Image (cartoon, rainbow, N blue to C red; front, top):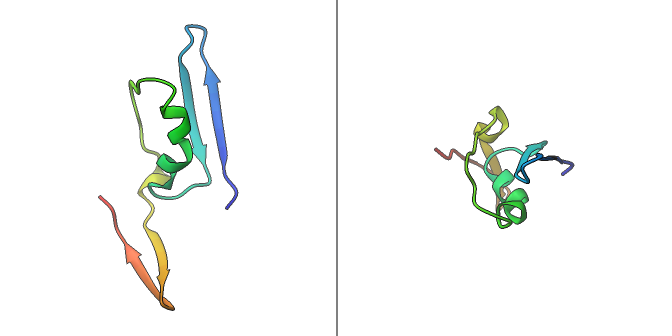
Length: 67
């Protein structure tokens, strides 16, 4: 899986970051190391966050919808 994390360090020392190329809630896993650096003040989900994830289980396709 190829993805990209854009990180902006603002003049006041705060960080802003975004993830591209990750669908569903996996973006939280990818950025968890950044969220451990301090307190999250705001979070906004992109369209990719709401894409339904699919997992293969025993050769079958299982569709998982997370709300």
